[in-house]
Image (tube, rainbow, N blue to C red):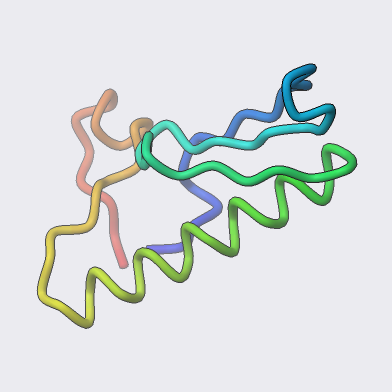
Length: 76
């Protein structure tokens, strides 16, 4: 499943003085970047690596929240 179907968010954090990107389906992951684009690229890359690792280890990969909410099953 393509990682572009997951739900991403980017916000400014004054604590780190950078933008932080997160992914709804992977709440333990985040990525800091100097701008929104860098943060989004970073989290998408991290999610892709995480999904690849989960598949390699036979773990269940979370479905995108849009697929869960719609009642549809995602296709690979």
